[in-house]
Length: 223
Ligand SMILES: C[S@@+](CC[C@H](N)C(=O)[O-])C[C@H]1O[C@@H](n2cnc3c(N)ncnc32)[C@H](O)[C@@H]1O
Figure 1 (cartoon, protein in one colour):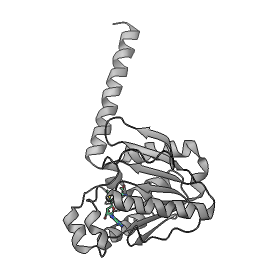
Figure 2 (spheres, helix red, strand yellow):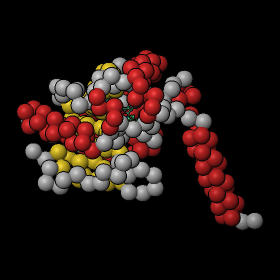
Figure 3 (tube, helix red, strand yellow):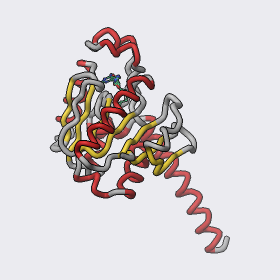
Figure 4 (spheres, helix red, strand yellow):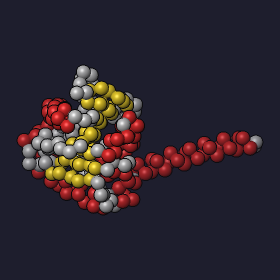
């Protein structure tokens, strides 16, 4: 066998081993296991329904965390558009167990807030943040619609936690907030519910991922 043929075989073998490692890590929830976290197990809607104290429980879905690759891809795209987002506050509406907060902090965001109305998920989120010794993330136990934006928030993250009517209310809150604060803002949303594209007169689509898995969109809010 020639050297080139051996090299080609070695490359194929290396690719297969890498794929196996990726599959193994995914299946084993490696991120959680290696840090002793609990972000991967889904939580049924009925469970949250019975213990979240809000009239808006009827609009929510179950707890399903954003896939690691989607967090990485969507936030990397956003940072590529505007690096200054790292210095401003990032809010995850319906943060669940805090996976997005933890990953976003690792990617360099310096101020993060998660809002979660399930007390049990809020407690799990706090535990997870403590385990990774988070310095930048805080979690608020409450309804995302009631959450009063303040300070210098620039990134608004949604992994479609609720139906469109609530999403729309929060988008209006965000627009009002950004107008008063006179600053740019970005909506990142993982479109698990197929809401589709936001109104182009109000939100400029910066990036849309439509490949395998769940689509995600990144918008700049137009004021
Ligand atoms: C699909 S999970 C996403 C979790 C996390 N953002 C992520 O991407 O990994 C949606 C979360 O939103 C929460 N949620 C739904 N409606 C809410 C509301 N009105 N206020 C606060 N949290 C809400 C649910 O309890 C659930 O934990």
